Amino acid sequence: MDRPETPPQPATPGPPHPATRRTWLRTTFSSLQVRNFRIYYLGQTASMVGTWMRRTAMGWVIYEMTGSRAQLGMVMGLALLPMFLLSPLAGTIADRVDKRRLVVLTQLLAAASSAATALLLFTGWAQPWHLMALATLGGIAFAFEVPSRQAFVSDLVGREHLLNAVALNSVLVNSSRVVGPAIAGLIMAAVGAGWCFLLDAVSYLVVTFTLLTLRLPPYRAPARLTSHWQDLLEGFREVHHNRRVRILMLLMALMGVFGWACQTLMPAIAQDILLLGEWEYGLMMAMFGVGAIAGALFVAGRTAADTSRRQVFGGVWLLCVGALAVAASRHPAPMGAGLAVAGFGAVMFMSTSNSLVQTSVEDRLRGRIMGIWSVVFGGSLPLGSFLAGWVAQVVSPFLTIALFASVLALSSFVIWRRLPRRQATV
View 1 (spheres, helix red, strand yellow):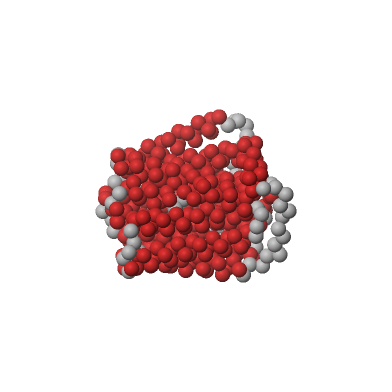
View 2: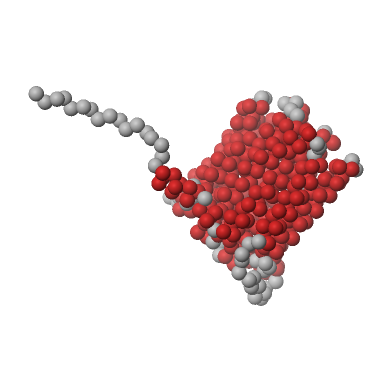
């Protein structure tokens, strides 16, 4: 008599195959195979942690001094306003000079700004106008650094690894967004905010050292047949005629104005409503970075062929969902979760759109285009900070965040609906 057949057993899921893990690691961290980028990345690690320590301490100190939400928005805006005014010029300069040397000069200027702020806080001479002036000086350094640094990264890794390098830079920025505020909270509670600015100044010197150790071919200056003004006009003409770049610039502007109110107003929410101390405030600010790291790793694991309009617009809408969750929360735990969702969406949009813009233009135009990208980013962010601060002075911070997120979600949805339906990418 035949035995009854044993029904097939469902396969039990096991651990990922080692080859699969190796493939994922090679894809996600492919740009780190380039020696120069590895060294550059290590230097940027120190700089980014210092940057987020400084930003966290600046918001806390200015609000503690003034108690004014409007001035809180103002000092955050002044740190970014020079990007709006100077980044187009910085982009044309980046296309004409040695980008490494330009980045080094910006690091030294930023170090001087942070060191001066630390000195004023240590001596007790600091006044709100001092902090605003030094924040503006740091913003000038930032305005020249961003387009030159972004174009410089492309020179280090090439187009093949550009999306991955941009995404890994976002991992770094947002890992620092977690670590930096947490360390800043501990330092402010233990020894005072001045040490946050001093350590930030030291971090810029670390970056300068790593930049000087890169092995690069001798710099060859391009032929200068046109003026800076003509170069700038050529960059704006490219943005006008390149439909993909034009749409991404518009989305960036909307994101800058309406997407960051929850971060701008967090010092006021932490001190006035949640009654948090420095350490708890640092942890709250770090939650945005937790989500942002996850978003950056998600993008890093994708290839250039994977990028689509869903990845661009999905990032915008995830940011809106997270901001609305923050606006609806009255307790640190759900508010932190909302910040994490917002961070995931923000970085998914920023990393994807940045790489799409850079790969959509010719190499000779990249510095100028990234200068215009920086002016859109740097112009919209201070405008959003000023606007959020003044609105929150009239209504509650929570209502301000909800209004801004709703405007961003609605306007981006209108842009989505007007795009051709058959096209996969933006």
